[in-house]
Image (cartoon, rainbow, N blue to C red):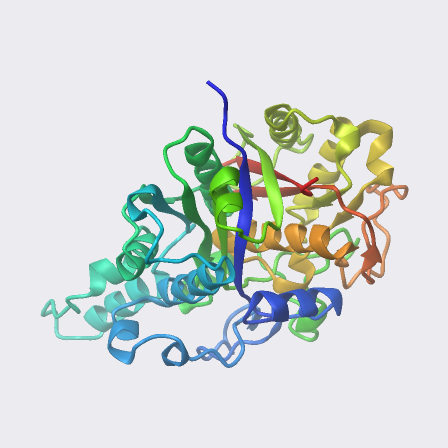
Length: 416
C-alpha cells in the first residue's frame, strides 16, 4: 500500500509569550521570557512562586460566556488555538467532508483545576456531596477534542493521547498515520494544558522538578546552562492542521511543510528520570529518521525537549551526538522552553510549530538565559545560545519526552 503524503496547512498558538501564532513567533525571535510571579493564586508559601502563565487571557474574548463556563481552562485553550489553526488553513467547513476530518489531541493532565476546586469545595463543606454537574465533563482529558469536533461538526476519529509531556507529539504522530493510511483527509491535532494551579505547582514542587529561582523568574528556565535547577511550568495550547497533500493541493491551500516521519520509544528506566545514557532518546530519533526515509546528515535543526533539568538536558545532547555523529555540530539545536516554560502535554505541539516557522522564515529561535558553560556538554554543539540565528532549514526535528519514559519525535521537511 502506498502511503499518502501529509502536509501542514494551518497553525494556531496560545502561549505565555504570544496569544496567536504570529505573536508567538515574534516572542521567540526576540528571546522573550514568559516567566513571571504567579497571579492565579497566592503562591507565597510555595517553593516556586512563578510560572509561565498566559498574559491577559479572557476566555469570553473568544468564546460564548455560557459555553466557556462549561470548560476547564485546558479546553478553553484548545478551542482558541484550534479556531486559529482552522481559520489559518482556510478550511471551508461548508464544503469539506466532515466524516473524513478528525481531531486527535494531546493533554498530559487535563482538567486539573476543575478537579482541584471541586475537591476543595467538598472538603470545606459539611460533607454533603454538592458537586457541579459539569465536574466530570470539564475534567476529563478527552473533552477538548470532543468540544472541537462538536463546534465544527467533525465526525472522523476523535480522541486524546495521554503520555505526559509527550502527549501532543503522540497526537501528531497518530494524526500523521491516520492520514497516511487513507482513513482521513484532514486532522486537527495538537495539545493543551492548564496546570498552573495549586495542585500542579504543589505536586511538581514536591518532586523537586521545578526551578526555585524566585529572585529572577525570567531567567529561571535556562536549558543547557550549568546553573539550571529545574523546569518552569507553562500553560497554553498549540494546534496544527494536518492534511493529505493531494487534498490540500486540490483546494489551493497554503502548505507550511511536509510531515515526513514520526518515531516512538520508551526509556523503560524510571518513573520520572531519563535514562542517563539517553538510550530511549537514541532509539526514538533513529526510529523517526527511518520512518521518514532520511539520513542523519539531512537534519538542519532540532528543537530539543530541553527542559532545563540537570539530568535531562545532558542525556538528550549525548543522544544527539550518538545519532548524528560529526554532523551534530552542524545542526542548529535549541530549546524554546527557555522562553515558554514547559507546557507539559502541549509542549510537543507548540515546539513543532516553532520548528515549522523556523523552516518557513529561515531563522532558528534562540535558547535564552545561557551564561555558564556546563562541562558535561560538548562545546562544539551549536545550541543557538541567546540570539536567533539565520539558517535555511530544510529538515527540522522536534523532540518531546514524558514522565514514564515516553519518547516521541517528529520530522518536518520543507516542500520542494
